[in-house]
Each structure stands twice: as C-alpha cells, then as structure tokens.
Amino acid sequence: MPYSCDIPDDLDNDDVVFWTQSQSTIQQQLDLNTQIFSACQASNPVQGTLVGTSFVARDMMQLVDALGGDGLLRYVGTYIFRTLKPSKCSGLAGVSYGTLIGDTVAAMFPDRMGRVILDGNVDPIDYYHGEYVQALLKYSLRLTSAYSYADNFDDTDLALAAFFDGCAKYPNLCNLTSASNMTGAQLEQQFLDHMDLLAKGNYSGPDAVQVERVTFSSLYHPNQYRSLSASLQKTYNRITPTTTTNTTRRSLDPITNPPTKTLHQRAAEASFIFKAIRCGDGRFGGVNLTVSDMEAILEDYDPYDEKFLLEVVAANVKSCANWPQRAKEIYSGNFNVQTKHGILYINSPYDPITPYSSAEKASALFPGSVILTHNGYGVSHSLQPTSSLAYPSH
Image: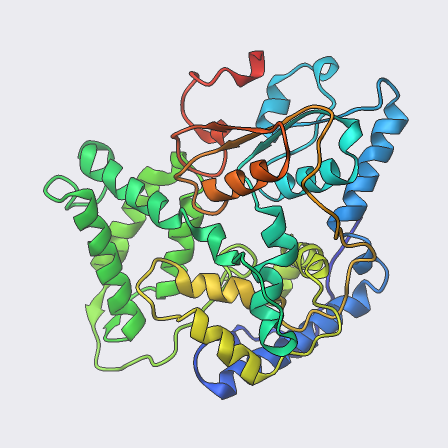
C-alpha cells in the first residue's frame, strides 16, 4: 500500500529539530511534529489507519489461503528465504520489525503456524505496551509497565565494545591509528572522549549526533566495520579547539531522521510509513503531549549521559509525539499461546538494535519455542561472514 506525506515547504526546516532541556525548543519540536504529522494524516486519511501490524498479519493469512496447500504459514528470515527453493518455503521476512509481525500473526493464528523463524528480535510486549506507550503517555495517563523501550538498546554498548575489541585484536584490519597500542576498552573510551568534546562544543568538527548515527547504523553490518574505523579516524583528525560553545545538541532518530536529509527527502523514504505503523500501533492517536510531559521524559533519558546513544534513544522514543492516527486494529490479546509448531528465535548478544533480551522475552511467551544463539555481530545471523551456520539445509 503506497504511503507518502506531502510536507509543506514552510515545514522543511531541520534547524528546529532539537531535544534539549529548553522549554522553547521542546515546544518547537512538538509544534513541528503536530504540523508534519497532520500533513501525513491529510495525505493518507485512510491508508494511515490500515498499515498496522494486525492488518498485515491478516493479509498474510489471506495470502496463505489464496495459495492453497495445508493452510499453514511458513515465516522465515529474509536471507534464509533467498537460499531456499521456492517449492520448499513460502515464507516472508522475519527479521527486526518482521519478528514483531511474526509474533503477532503467531498470537492471532496459533493453530495455523507452520515453521516460524524469527531473527534479530523485537520484544512484542514492549512494542505494544512498553516504552513506546509508557515514555509518551505515562505522565499524562499514568500508565505503568515493567518493560522499557530502552531495552532495545541493551546490547548497543556490547556491540560497540565488540567492535573496538576487534580493532585491538586485529589492528592490521582496523584503520584506527591507536589500534595497535590500545586495548578495546581504551579505544572505546577514546571514541567516547571525542564525542564528548564535540557534544560540549569546545571543539569543532562533525556533528556529534551525526557521528553517533553513522556509528550506530554501521554496527548493523559487520562488513562495514573496517570502513567505520576509517571514518572514525578521519573524525578524530578533524576535531580542533574552538572558542565558541554549542549549548544545544541536535538529536535525531538514527533510523528515520538522518540529519543530512530534508523532510521532503525523508518523506519519500520509509521513515513516515514506519511512523504510521509504529505510532499507530502504539495508541498515540488523540493524545496531545505538553512541554511538561516531555520534560518528565527527558528526566528519564538524560541526553548528556555518557552511555552510548542514550540521547538518540530518547529522540527515537519521542518521535511519535502527537501522531494523530491510530491503526484500525491494534493487537491487545495474549502472546502466551501454544502454536502448532514451536517458534525458533535467533539472536546475538552483540546486536546493536534488536537485543538478545528481546529474544528471551519473546521466547518465554510462546510455549515450545527455543532460542538459537549465535556469537556474530550485527542485526541478523545471515550478515555474518561465515558458512558455518548451515540453517538453510536444516
């Protein structure tokens, strides 16, 4: 289903996209969100309510019915799908957000699940009832939850540490000049120190959040690690003292709001359709957040904490503020259901965005499911440069 947002030219202003402790900039962002999201609603008065995860699950089962056969859904990871013969598998993508689709369809149609493989997992309880809702609404609606969307970044620090450990272990494959005489922990601290210099505004160089965004996205793909090390070294070389101080840090969602792109460019990509799905599923329709609401959230997600990407986490959590539309159907049932066949969850403890803890939580919900742990890096096992994982033949 096509989805795009016709954003007016007068809203094409990245300069006001800040998340700081300043009440005026928070209000600017809320006002901008309201205007942009209203434009999305005007462009998609019907489509915006039909792209929710539950409707996708129902569409999938209609496809299974149309194909005939035994009526069971085979739902597997994208890269596994590419290695199998079409006659062996009628599966779809089951990676990252695709795992949330898999969990949802399994909960809605447990008796119709064939072989389900979910790789690089999202916690379904968190998605529907956790920080996506809690961080935005708990102060105005006083919702409570034991889950936190920040869990999605549980393994970001582990992934970052593993990257620098690899540099220290194989300095000949790493472009950081200090790789041969520093430990992984020292290389990581060097990175954090440089980001701190940029963030405080005492030194000039690339935007700190842009560097964090590039680093974060590169952690998805192990084949980009060498080029990431080169990019970081260039960044270090460009940092020089300055007499000016930047008192605000620009904070952008690393996935949906790249700072080098205009709103028009982002509207042409997947950013707004993902907002329509995620924000619509998250029950944000009809809730107008205030500056006080957002200040309370910022107290929980201190944008100047040294923890890697915590500021970006905060921006990502708040990216649905004042979304006007709700999905026509939002799954609110139980995930603790017995599927016809057990679900296989695959995850790494070094995944920067879909952490191992999400696989544990999801697997605990579905009786008979199991977790296959791999010690590779990035979002999916299929991104690992090895042939030792022989999943396609089994």
